[in-house]
Amino acid sequence: MTAVAFRLDPFIELTDEVFLKLCQANPDIKFESTAQGELIVVPPTGGETGNRNLRLTQQLGIWSDADGTGLAFDSSTLFILPNKARRSPDAAWILLERWNQLTPEERETFPPICPDFVVELRSPSDSLRAVQDKMQEYMDNDARLGWLINPKAQQVEIYRQGQEKELLQAPASLSGEQVLPGFVLDLKAIL
Image (cartoon, rainbow, N blue to C red):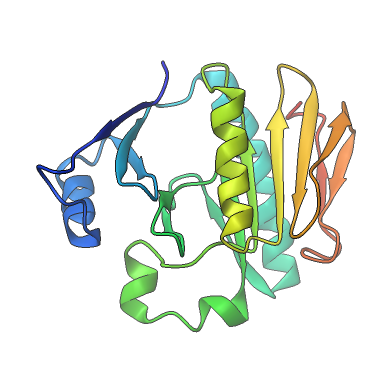
């Protein structure tokens, strides 16, 4: 299955309140939206992708708990980016200092913040261009580091703030660099 995107304007304005109500009324459906107001229905992942995503978030969560300088999030977390897009990366991490600047209400619903670190794990149904555009959107909204993991091609694209993306072929691991000091993602169960 592939994601489906459609416009609601000019019939319905997709405000944060309307979007929240839509999600609450349809808890079994995962939604995102673009900065241009397109509503995206995101299909569930298959078994292989789900297991890879578990391995990814598991490693990030264990490191984040031990490090203590930020919080890790899984693919069910939706963030409202500064450009007003609503996105759910497959894994994310936010510096605790930035997270603590949000109000309790903002933390409880869809946090209005772009994560410092994001990961997208390309599933077989994902268009490479669409996932690359999503990664660029995170960077344009001040993410500091991002990884696009493409198991089918055995590749990883590394996105860094203010730099050209880097393409790695079949790396064994990835470093969190200065954004996640000491974090190393073991890719043997993911690629």
